[in-house]
Image (cartoon, rainbow, N blue to C red; front, side, top):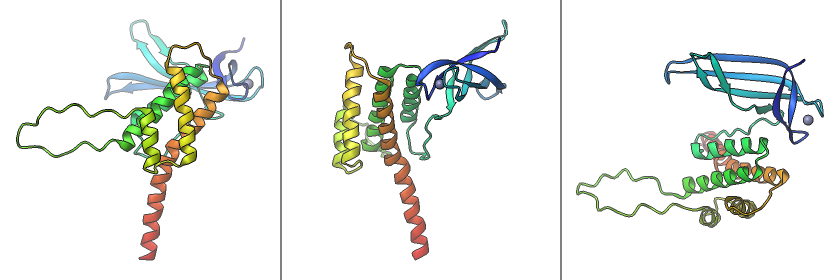
Length: 230
Ligand SMILES: [Zn+2]
């Protein structure tokens, strides 16, 4: 009997037991963190639509005494690989939230995905709108001040529009995401379709791309053009 692995089929939009046709593993020991690491790539076909599916697993735990390994769930890397961004300014919390949202979507957890997408956008608002930490060191002991109020999603979206960091269309998408995030974050009896959650994911990707990647790229372009013309 052939091996199979559970993976989200991007065409069937469902978890399937893909028929495995090949795998490769890379394992080693990370001296810096003093832990073993491992990656496994699995190749197979969807049993329903027969499409090629490639997934990746990560080694989560290794028990030396029992020689027992624990691997993560399979995350699809082909087709529709996880989205990547080029800007180095994107905070880790934004990226982590987007990854978590994608994993939730792939496992059919649409409500969790919406919560994570909202978290990503809220983190973007805080990063873009919060003033950078002051490097000024006072001579006298500082007067204890109340910690600065953290920007919440609704207020953040309004400010992004006010400061023209996002345009009207991105603002509308953000409002939709906020509405779904609010529904998802409260213990109401709701369901969110995969289609809606995937659309919201596309909107958040567009906002992140616009605010970070495209802005960086345009700045680079401008400074390059300036060197030709001066
Ligand atoms: Zn399929």
